[in-house]
Length: 351
Image 1: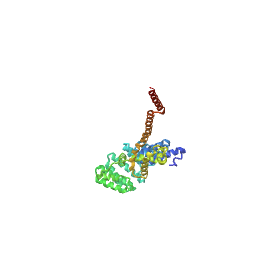
Image 2: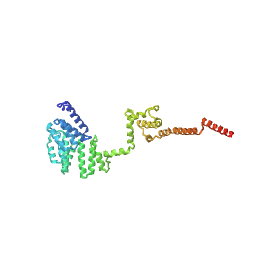
Image 3: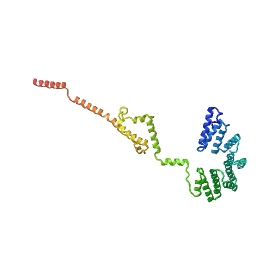
Image 4: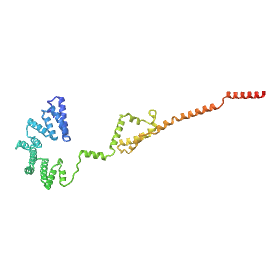
């Protein structure tokens, strides 16, 4: 790839190369995204064969057969050869033009010794014949190729698989099962779904697991996973020192001046540390029920109510002292009373 990108400026070559690499990595898992990467590379360097090839292959995988046909034809004009005849014919077939597809297959050199190329063209032609309603001709082509036993094992497996598929469409269940089994024996990499096809012929109902159903099953089966995930995140941030509130919880008990309510919440904080440690070690967080205790703290309210009580006692005592001081006679008042009594006695004596 680097050799073909040498004619581009370095920055442009890096961008185009990155898009081509991404397209190659994603073509099997996400063909549509791979196709977008290839199109991005084609817009920047559409004259390079490697770029057009990436665009054609990803478009074919993504089901964009019109674009794939255009790109494959352009590549064949630039590079020549017959290697792209099978995919070009298959694109014509996918676009609903079987006659044009047969004309493309007729362009294959009959003297070619490339057995893989010949086998690919034969498989495409058999499919086209079946689409046209010529099932007998399609089966004859496949039978002739199978009887010659020429080509790699996986190619022979594909021939048998196609033949078994036609037999199943014709209603020959036993024959289809036999040929699917024969294809499975030659499919060393288990790339074909022969086991599933045999199971279906035997009446076995296979479960259909879609990605959405698998996600729902996982979410329903793992009860409490979301709560554990939400608890683990702040614990990790506490270990990294991202949240200051977590640092206050981890401070020693001696720092009581910073928080007046520290004496009240020490026990609850100690209970919090235990489930956090168990979760970090991978144990089940059975102590999660401790969390609701943090929602109420009654003791600080009791302390606030006790404070005004001494003031009420002092006021009461002050009132009693004043009343006592008013009721008790002073020393001057006693002298006046005695003088008045003496004056009264003197007047009585004079009389």
